[in-house]
Image (cartoon, rainbow, N blue to C red; front, side, top):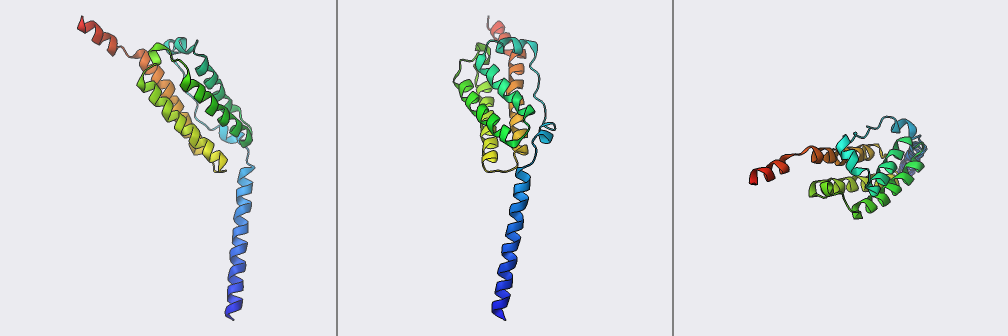
Length: 165
């Protein structure tokens, strides 16, 4: 009798493990296009910031790669886009920043963005749902872009220099 009990238990365990793998496969074949339409949009740069980044080729290349994420149809497309973002982020990190943006606040935001790009890449490599990490990456990118706007609109440094004279 105990042998039958153990065989029955083993059979149930093996059967339950097999069903979970089917669910994971079904999720992997999902269409990314429906998720991409729900992602938050990136913030708009104000005209002063836009004029400063106009000649910054590394940023323009990174920005174009980031825009492609919203047009991805399948998760496989997203994997390629994230790999391209990683490469463009390395180029952006090593590029020469415009003088107004060559400050620790901008570089710190870029490091945060790099962290979330790598987190999204890890989720995709380990076949986990990347939606949350992609949303965090977009929030970090919006913070990076917003820091451009804050820096351009910040007149405190100029006022301090005027008061010293």
